Length: 268
Image (cartoon, rainbow, N blue to C red; front, side):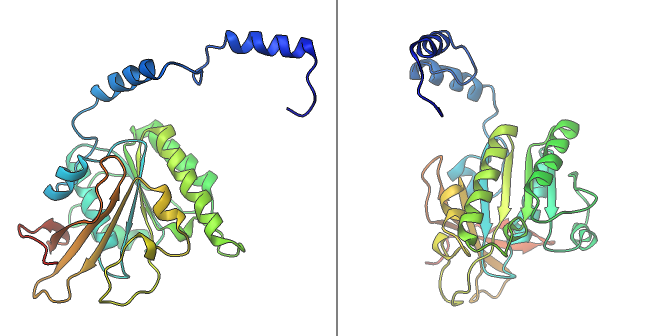
């Protein structure tokens, strides 16, 4: 309030607040809990499944209103993991949109042997959050959107800003609010800072800002197993806020361009 309120203003405000029935009105926690449980029970077991047994057993699928970060060393499988999830979601009749800033659209689409059902903007604009919001909202209205993939974070920020960390924090909160408002799951690919190849990456290695790890609901890391004779990689669930999962790993193998979990225990 920008001025001192007189007694009439105070009485008027008190009357308005006492009778307020808006969507954001204050209610008993028990009533809110019952309402949210009713909404939750109307949903299936998982919003979307990854078809990686270890991941699905630990985090029980991907739900609307959440933000997942996928990261790992350069050329170690981040986009392949995201494309694998896209194929799995299409087989579950889920509707998604891709923003593939990292590679040209034709190159990205050519990667799929059989193109799954998802949507893309005809042209991309970088560093334009309002534009991004409108395209996601457009897809939600037209196609009943369930998820969005963004590859990658640094195309959404102004690299000329003096404080990149604060800028990234703003973007992360923007994406989280968008996921909640539209009840979709947003997957964001993010890069790591340079680390030694023999070091196992975690959320502290995410490039330019600690907000990347702090603001997301899930964080996954993927890197190739150098000792393996096969085309294998490790996927680590760095964090999952819903169930408190941290540091769990499983092995995947690239088969016919996409990743499949290998039925063996990861060698620590």
